[in-house]
Image 1 (cartoon, rainbow, N blue to C red):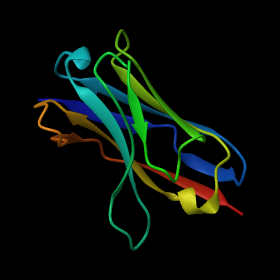
Image 2 (image 1 turned 180 degrees about the horizontal axis):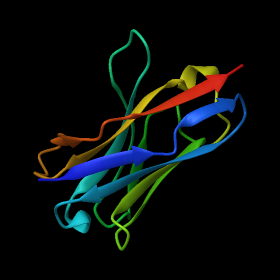
Image 3 (image 1 turned 45 degrees about the vertical axis):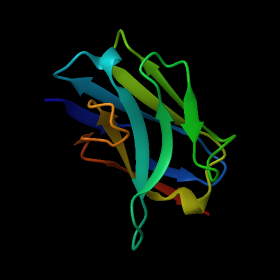
Length: 119
């Protein structure tokens, strides 16, 4: 079992920055890949970024590449999403997720944190 708790969401003006955090507990954090997803109103949940177990490799959706940075601190059991140059279209509920089975899918999800970007 893995528990994931996101924090750091809020309201920000376009062009601003936010850093999301996701604290994990329940299993050895460094043993599984982590990802961030988001779901905007009326849309399906979409991939944002992922990071490998050691943090050595990261991948991003084209829509956030160059603006968002995913990182992790395995000593703190936490994954982060630094979001810069935010746009109104980044408004969504952001979720962190864990891939503990290494099947390429995510089997544990957090409750989500709201990010709202005003124009």
